[in-house]
Length: 608
Image (cartoon, rainbow, N blue to C red; front, side, top):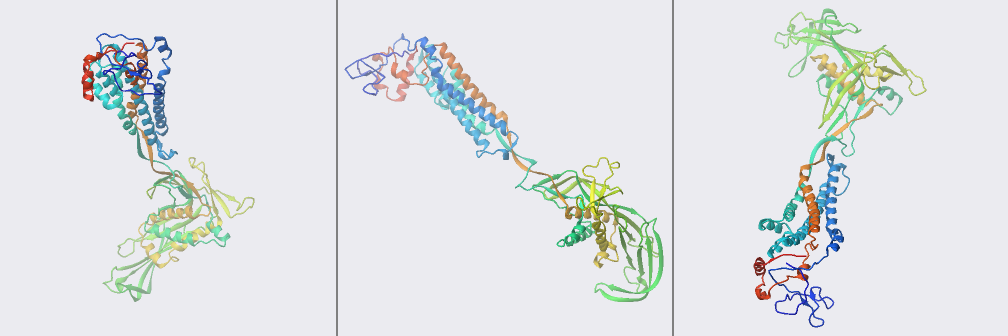
């Protein structure tokens, strides 16, 4: 196929399509009548000759400039791909909340992937178009193959036909067709790169903090005395709830504020009360006596009051070591009144609580003692079980407090007693007073104790707090309903340990000088994960497109091929040289099918 510009006279075999532009068309020769331009004809011949369309020197000098559009497209494809990688590196394993732009990362990736695909198809199409001319320069080819190249440069459908139709396909053009088809996968693959997973992480939900009250100072009663508006009502109610809850072994939920589904506080140390219980049965002094008394009883179910006259009442006093007031136990053999009375004995036992009277400033809170008789026994009355518990001020360290979906738990509680040496502290800086004392954790005995070792208690709280407790658990002072429950308790040691925990919680929560320890708030947050394997194909396609462009530029220079690419102008301006008009009936070449059949029979080559 020779593209040669020729001057020809009008005839019925001349391509008649054309247009005038300022009285002249570039696709026409200048021969003929003045002002008339004839189209270039198409001529077939077995032998071909050509005149150089582009001189080699001029081609070499113009080598880079004519490719500027494709080079620019290749640069953009690389830039788009690099932008995708930059975004992926920024967001990989990051919280979605750390992304502060209005457009989401996956949307940006999609935009850049679309840009990379568009520029990739552009440069590949231009390369296929350029390789078409080189293909026809190498040897004689059927004209119809020019259509196959042209369609391959227009999209995936033509590229697919190109791969199926041509035999002995040129390697570079085949690569270009493959890239064109695979470019359809560039956007779907890029949309699979980002995935989102829910992870548990340290967060703050809605600006809420995770707070846990703790205190090293307890001056509730001093504060109440110094402030007329202050009241101990809330404290008293909380204290009563602590006692009742400890008797029934009720779980007491500590006070906290959790700003998320899970909150964790590590090594929380606070002022508290510790209980140490022992079985004092063997060391308790016992003194018993019998007497005659008139007893009022209540007979179920009517609960009618009945007076029992002149019944024998046995009474015993039990004095555990260290207590000033004895414990009393009284029992009455009701068979004296009627043999059908059930149970056969009326038993009345009591408990006592001896508060700190002259221990200031020792870390002593009070001593509790109670007696417990077997549920079933026969006369004479057996020795009861005597439980003695000592309550002291102490430091309590909670190891890893956690709240998960509203459920409070701790891995352990370490109770550390104070040393007997206390330090007098001023009420206010520069104002000496004996109202406050600091209790200290012994550094030699507890070298691993963390945090502040000094805990402060005022003198009023030191005395008044145990007094309030005494009014509730002392047998002869507590309400009747509470005394019945108290006397029927079966495990006083467990009750006092529960009580010490409840008192510690009351101190921690209601102390006027409490502070709030901020914890770690954990919740489920959406994280971005990059699935890097999905970027392999887009990267290879962009690389292949750019390698194809460079290879096409090199091959074009080696063959000194004109840089016509996908332009249709060379066919219009140069046409076919040597086409025999007697062998071509243009009247039968109207439909596309007819044109293709004729193109199948014509072989051409391009000579420059």
